Image (cartoon, rainbow, N blue to C red; front, side, top):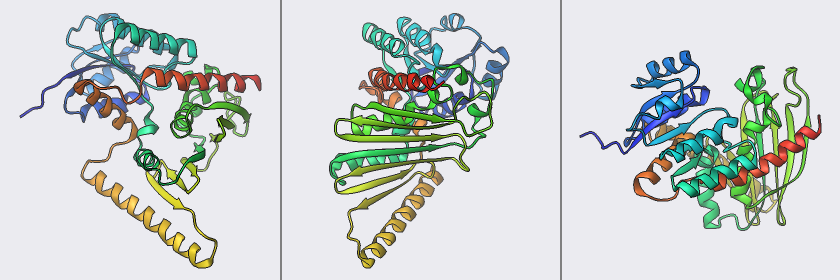
Length: 349
């Protein structure tokens, strides 16, 4: 028996990230994509054909006439988020918004105020919060297994072939902070999750790569949350893509590898040879167990990446009537920090 479809989705924007959204919505049983919209006629017709979407539009005003739509999924460039999100909510639709929520805190605040005024459901895609090792880390932290958290360090390493960085015509290069402004939201919201309210202490940037359209392609930033410290390093010149997260507690360390979806819990140990040997074996066992679990879940189609998990949780919240997994208020708090970082980056120019 076919499940009842409660969510009728219109996807706005047919860029690279839209394929991730198309695929995720297809696997959510009580959701259905009923329309797709993009100002690029060729792109929207291709998306409609590839994903077998019944209706395609080149303007949201035309699409707005389709009565069965209940949710807009905004996958457009950041500078369009405020207009589209607010239009959706004012027209009576729920809305899912790609990260970051907006490029300025003023724009983000307007989205928050619109959501409160309309009472519509709105969610922001902070997908790294829902990657399997991060979800596991959040559970471990809630249990207190590593004691009080006192710091976190996030390394985000991209190769020079990263699609946005290597495309000289990509819209991200025109934003305040350049390519960094589109991706820095990830380490920001992770640090907010692990440390609480964070403030930027320092931002340093440099130029190492060969692309003339990128003013800077290396970044190191430090943050403070009360007496706690956070840091992030971002590169677009790495030999391989890597995302590493270290969370430091008084009684242990969590080491996450988001790319390989593995996590190691490192308890405090003495420094004897035997203790070091036992600890090495413990780490190897944990990595093997994480890898084996990932293989099983992928094999049985029970493994979801952060994008799909965030979308699934939002869809579930709509059906069951509880708060979205990432609220627009949380999106605003992250944008405030991002805006401050972009100002500091541009000061180096």
